[in-house]
Image (tube, one colour):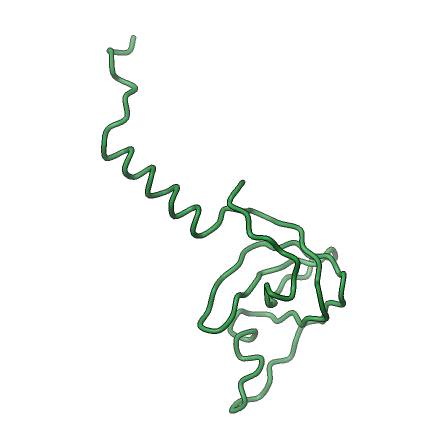
Length: 112
């Protein structure tokens, strides 16, 4: 039998829960979100290749593939860099890579 007040949350638990919710809201707990390409966009093997797509003092990375406008992908994750917003995507045939989120109709969601 439970003692009275046994299920009350401690102040530390409530603080930690509030912090976890805030982090989830900032980071995004969207899971997998459907998206479509709004323009032709390249998919690269890594986030760093995507970030160096237009760097002029090194060889251009070779994309895995190019999405055409309207092509469907599933957004697995997203990340911000210094000058980019990158989406980790999976195509319907199972290929995964990184592309610019700004080239997708992806709307980041905080729901699970």
